Image (cartoon, rainbow, N blue to C red; front, side, top):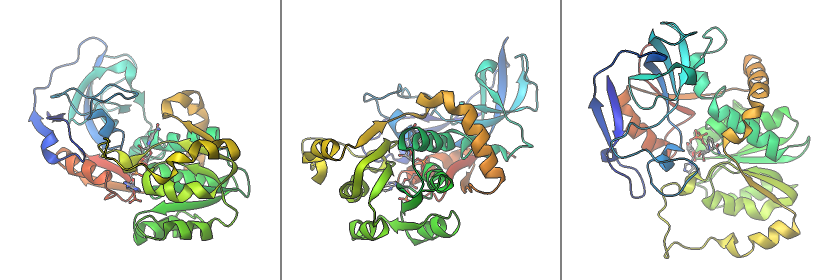
Length: 338
Ligand code: NDP
């Protein structure tokens, strides 16, 4: 088999030489184990955190360890009850062509219900992140205004479409005209603004004449700076990700953001709710998520877009690109035949 390991920890933006492609020998499954062949590998922003050894909510990938990641795999050989060769499963087997894993950690996927890749996207972890963060924390009401950045991406695209289903206005923020056009014309958001425009704050004021009731935070940085003054009394801010800063090295010379001095006063005076969350916090909502999102996707009310690169060797460049906005839709790597 082939696998990609973490060769060294990045300083700032990851580089190709932080990764190493290796060959390894495949072993046969022991009692309770299955041998998997990877079909789809998901690339997700959280992997940048796993490459560093700073304090976080999850342990880092060790040097020379296989890069972590969600996968959709075919069972090649099984010694686990309930799983047989040919079954398609959701696994967390990382950046490799094959994996020997404990059968108990796997969830079977029915290829007749939806394309199997969606188990890593709209019907998987990113979709669940959008659903839980928006509904459990954001709680959008009819007529309210919801703003989300990385709006053409895996999480953001679902956030805006669910907001619309709940009767709210959805305003997206994305990088570039193509992504913004897609977000409005294909996904049905009410507007989408380009965060590269120098006058983002002014555009946001026009797009949100009644202020912002829910800001689903995917990005941080300059986007938060533009959104912050427009937050209404009692606004809810699910803090999901801060991708603008994932490659930032913070030190004594890092400039202090403009809002830093006023944020506690704003939280008090406007009675704002900021709540950070990790999707696994809402595991109890998984059944509701699969029922609702499954239905919305089947009915075409939630659309999704995939951005696929071919072959395991493409993963490092694709991942570096994801942190820069080179992806247009859910970033996936196709490892084998579908
Ligand atoms: P996306 O598919 O949205 O891809 C990442 C996107 O981030 C890029 O395409 C780019 O879009 C945008 N981006 C990158 N840098 C910047 C920047 N400096 N300013 C503005 N936008 C930027 O990824 P996901 O949907 O998988 O993830 C979205 C967010 O959700 C991330 O922050 C991620 O960490 C978080 N997340 C959190 C989870 C949790 O449990 N809390 C679980 C899953 C995801 P563009 O070109 O439009 O700028």
